[in-house]
Length: 285
Image (tube, rainbow, N blue to C red):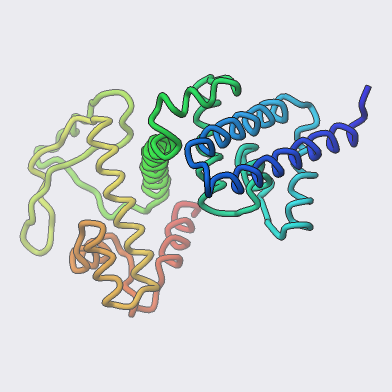
């Protein structure tokens, strides 16, 4: 039975064979474009098969470590340890660090996620309009996933901030009755409809039933304002104005929001970080 080092060496040798195949493909590509596509799809299938075998191996960590070490020492290409197998193999085979390897890795990852077998990769690529079309489809999917992850992160960030903030004030019902704050499950906070009163007060004219969709929108708005308030601490005035416009807001509106929520402006003594610390101390007291 092969020991761990023999397994590592076997995969490194297999990867080196793919490197030679890639060099042959590059050599043929200049004169035989149609043939070169066939050869490229075959090579990508071999790369994909290697990815499948590495991911299935108990020694995956050591194999990846050996490939990364050889890349760094012999070709001066650094790859992060948490990179996907396809990304590492693509960089190893092509010897490049950017677009080409990224595109090939994307195609392989997409095919693997779709349950395509390595020996059927060429058919999959052709059926989906070629390498670039497959890549574009994965980029669009990844962008949607990244946007969802970002928005979900904003909502969770806003929840944590609101939970620890000190109260700005207390609202009492004019008739001395309790507010009816019953709402739908999944929402944590209650929302009031207010108008400006005399002396800078806010008059509550209605309350809204708790609603998850409304809450997520409100929390994203709150998180966005907090992020802009943090940027206001470091950006020059003109840059901050442009940043606000890019996010669909206005600098004077953000400054007004900061004032209403006891968040200091850049030219004032207290920083946003100090505000947060003071709020935490108040809650802990």
